[in-house]
Length: 169
Image (cartoon, rainbow, N blue to C red; front, top):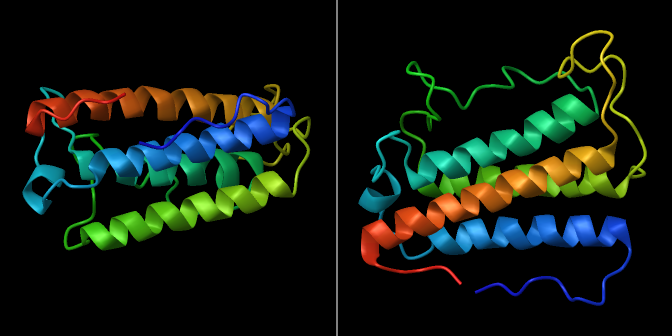
């Protein structure tokens, strides 16, 4: 299991970035060892699958940092939603392609984080936030991402235990 970042980190930027990478790795570890059927089968009443959760997290990275923080135009930022409003992996997309997309979005996020100050706000032209509303700083966005990853890692703990009995640490 991936170790938490060192307790000696005191720089907020390094702490946020290190914990984000930690949870990104935790999510991938929780999926490691699951077969294709288990990755694409739901164990929960809500119906989402482990692979759909990873697809969702790839879009979370893109929505919050590329579209939200940078204000870049992205095609269909909510593309991870299917017709029933659940996370949906596009038909025909392989597990390897989903993992690669997730890693690609995480790498792009790291670049964005490295090029900005924690106090930098999302730009006024960002479509992520309603006109006239305060724009969150990068620090707020990163903290939001951390809590989302921690929550979804916990969801995967439950799914993994229901699937094969493996429990998280």
